[in-house]
Length: 385
Image (tube, rainbow, N blue to C red):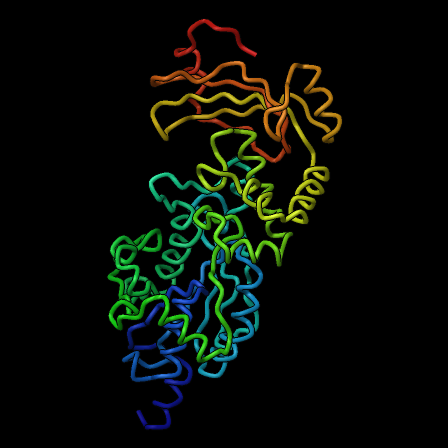
């Protein structure tokens, strides 16, 4: 083969015969620092830039400010260096639905934070918020880890792939667990840990290259934000995104008063304390705009942190009509909800819980096939609603 034909083959098939390097690009400060150094300092990477794939899993609920930063400062460099940037998302509720490729380009122009099957849609349908018990990151596994791995498997099959995650040197404990991103058996490299770059070093490097202080990448309803000052500032700047998170929490607390966004405290209480009246106003506007229902909610609590639930819509309508009918049926104010607690959960396990509650009619009616038989078996002869 002539030198000319070799050049043509390299141009047409830049990845052929070489090991792909797949960077899980989460769009935050750490993975951005890693990507920028690889582009600006070729000696730091040890591979050809055409072998690099920056791969982002879009949950559908990223802050718009993160999108703006990446489009303004990172995408131009990707275009300059012809970096292959792939954006993927869950295609449906089940893993069998696969993943959607939102964009696959060496000249990317847009960050598709809208995703496809979004995390917030799943949470609304289930009437819950992301779980924080025992520092679980199930949402990360489902909405990031799975689509990243599914796309990599589909794209490269059995080829050897150098998989890279941008945990910094302050997060060795996260690197050991990979916290939801490692859903396969491929070995993972952590260059920032190897370089000894902690968060401050990453922030300084990104600021040096871009001239801006990079914002944290996270979902608008991240349960690990915990009312941190930087998150409260973003909620003030974008109250509509705060209202999205408030809506999810409102529905979650209707189905389970023990399930605020931040584990032991609610996002609503945090924003009330912060004086974010616009976010609270937008929440009320949204609550008034959707259909409502009175739900019968039954829960079998098998053990601490493990329960089966059945939700049933008893009647539906607009908010004023549903709340008026709810009061006629004996529901009373319980915080920001109308509720009738028919059965309190007991001290031991298993135990039963039953209530009526008025809430936005976004929660799906579903339960395990064995729910009714288990409920009847455990019911101690008390009245049913």
